[in-house]
Length: 497
Image (cartoon, rainbow, N blue to C red):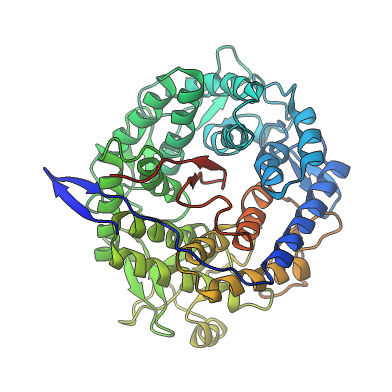
């Protein structure tokens, strides 16, 4: 049993298992194979129509180069292939990326010519590190390749400890682009940079990432211990007062906990910061809907709640479950389960079985941030939320299935298994496109058209979390691995603090 002790204001956590022992349903293997089939169809379409580029355009049977043209889909899918046992595809994939030139953006589209430190970190660096570990740490060429990339990403830190997110790779040395950033872009480097330091012997990467997070922690906050979403890299000061668990803040909060997990809480600063953000969220952001009593975390700005949530924010259920387990905190864990159920409800409430990009609600005291139309109110009265205007899309995102995976692995409650079965059925029924799979313009209307970009995270995250939900519990056990925000698993030590 995990025990929590406070010594000199520091959080100390003793050893305990994250996953219970569970016998999975007999049907699991069949569903796992269905996910493999979906992956092979998706990746096969990518090879046919988009090989050498970042993403498949599944409607037009073409390609999209949104990640500098370095074949993001291949890098992001490497560890998925490994986990699924697709050795032939994996060997072919290594051949496709062996000569990728990470010193220049390869896209001709001016909108994507600059380099995103955040996206390259979680996809390219993250995918390479995970694959390196899963294949016995023998393919040092992968490490060499992404070290070249990371050395150029490091120019984002030229102005100080808070990095810019946009870097111009067309110059030597690369040039950091001026402008505001957000805490997710700043704080989602620690897992990858620290792990690269281990495999290169260069501790500079770890120091850069840790110092960036601590610079965010050192700034004044709109709510106790919860940073504003926006940040100005040259000064390191907050930009605005918007507080959220959604996009722009999400993986900063995620990595506070996961960095503590992967380092065995060597520096308690990160775990303590996560716990303070959670405590603040319980006090200021936690609420229930007036219909269905669904549990939500609101956003917060201008000194008041903004009653909105999002698909991106729905990672929070799994994150709170992991933190609740590590801290042996039943309150956090049980709220995490309620957050998972509320996000899953957005899937169960639409004809397609997928939730929208953003949604809103009326809290138990009758407060809301938007006035619902009559149609919105009718939908709300049935489902306990309604779709934020203009945000009906589903972009193949993983977050709801991610949190559902954590709930299944930590409780063994078959309802979470069944949630994954329903989602897989929706994938095969509604997302099959002219080539591969595509997101939906309107989750309430499957005939409203599809989104012409099969982003690499579909293979890296959405399908991986589905596959692992149907896999034995010892396959990437949460007691042995921690996932980066792109679902790339890294080896994690036994939790002993």
